[in-house]
Length: 274
View 1 (cartoon, rainbow, N blue to C red):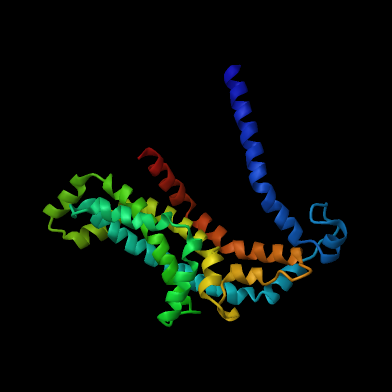
View 2 (spheres, rainbow, N blue to C red; view 1 turned 90 degrees about the vertical axis):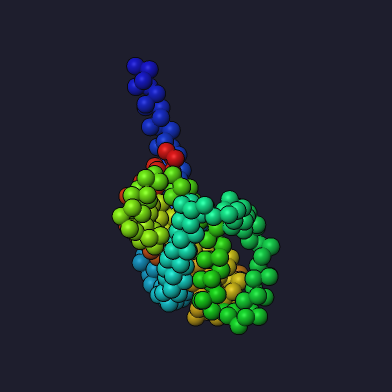
């Protein structure tokens, strides 16, 4: 009886937490289907008195979301691939070989993530302008790779370090070199960690606003998040249109998470054990 009560209490509390977590998302979705007159007359927190799909068409056209989504993907996909590729190589060397001062190198790479990004906005903006890459997607990709590399290396280093060394020694006896061991032995074993980091980094980079408005100036090069910011008016904001644009912008990240959900959960489980 006591165990049943504990189980029921646990499920009840988790249901409440889940509802509190999902409620804002459902609220945004409901607002996205309401008309402007309904929101203006009854407020955002009221029950809907209208239902329309025109908000999605308006958000798609006014924010030029197709172009903005393409820009976001042109930044996010290369940044994720470069970050994870470079981080996995660095983590492989630091975790599997006796490199001098490897712990110091790892800590130095991680220290960059401890700095508040706000204090680096002006220096990075000026540096990108001086080298001639201001207002380019290449600059935005480089910024995301630079800021994510230390954290990704730190996480992958923990996974690779705990892999049995007997596997690497057996591959070495069979004649495999460092490159072959990395590509054929280490990478397949760290696939759950790579998938988990890939899903997280895709979400972080795709939803970025701070660095996008720091190194990008032209409207036609803006990713989707700053494009949604442009929907907000100076005196009157169409919150239903902004909500519709937000729902559209969330589709790629949800799709990526659902695609890699199995590997993502597996990566978290391995991390918990280790």
